[in-house]
Image (tube, rainbow, N blue to C red):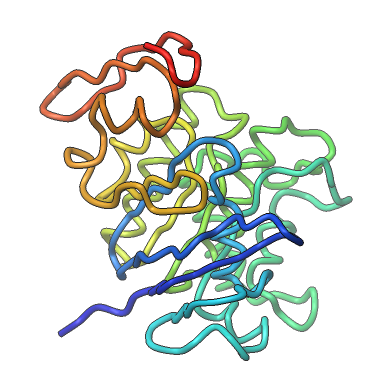
Length: 262
């Protein structure tokens, strides 16, 4: 039986006259972790916003579990996926626990014991149980980022979309977030599409990597097939060196390289 999936076919999007996505084809299946990488301005965040229905592609088709996104109300799309945008400076006068409970989208502030237990379990899993009653205004940017991840996880939707979720996190918390996202895909059968700039994290996290360049899919496949020295040099215009580390590709370092030289 074919697993439910997010499917994109020929997706194009433009901001005014600047075309950001130029015919993107890819998919994210239930239980699969897909990392979306590429240079700044390659269309990664725009692609996530098209899937969520925040932006409407000019051409192409996007379906979630066989249902077209086009024409659906935002509330219906939200039942199928959770979205964590890039961190903003907006901080609301809520506690961490209250912000996580917002993910359940209840009609009132009154939550039953099952809701509270669910939210507290997610915070415990993210190592934030001791901050549950702390105001968002009094915690760090990295902790607010983890609260946003918790708000998405508590909803338990079929798909998770995350835009640079490890921004502002130190090494330990990056590792924790990666492990939890991977576990959600494996244990709960969630499909995860995550935008990442750290390629080594993408290799550790993802079943598949989609590399965007200038709004097009430059490579799409398992990490071993996508992450190699020639591909990364062409995508990022830098002199990178990919080596094998523990049977997986690893970007050992890079030197800046002028476009068209070297």
